[in-house]
Amino acid sequence: MILVDTSVWIEQLRRGSERLQSLLYDEQVLCHPFIIGELACGTLRNRQEILRLLSVLPQVLVADHEEVVHLVEGRHLYGRGLGWVDVHLLASSILTRCTLWTLDKRLRQVAAALKISM
Image (cartoon, rainbow, N blue to C red; front, side, top):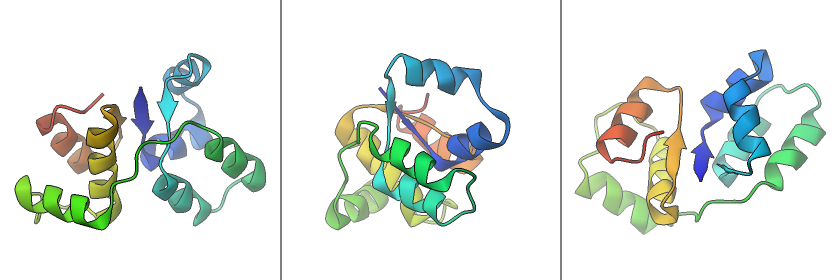
């Protein structure tokens, strides 16, 4: 299973992605409430439909505050250009035992180091 980051969804909405379409068809895509939230903060065509479709995807386990702080400290993720949502996605991917697909360079590098990158 694959947690698809906001950056990939934005690319899908702008240009389309055969790879993402295939993963969706094969029911391999997971979502996180923060990804839905990030997309909800933007301007979307077919806004309600997109948000509804994202909300019915299988969800990853959501890490709690202490788990995320522990990951930041334990893996020395501070000062690496990651945001709080990024680290939440990493933590949720680890908890769910799934891979993370992102187009964000820094997030992808850290995910690769944690062996959870697609």
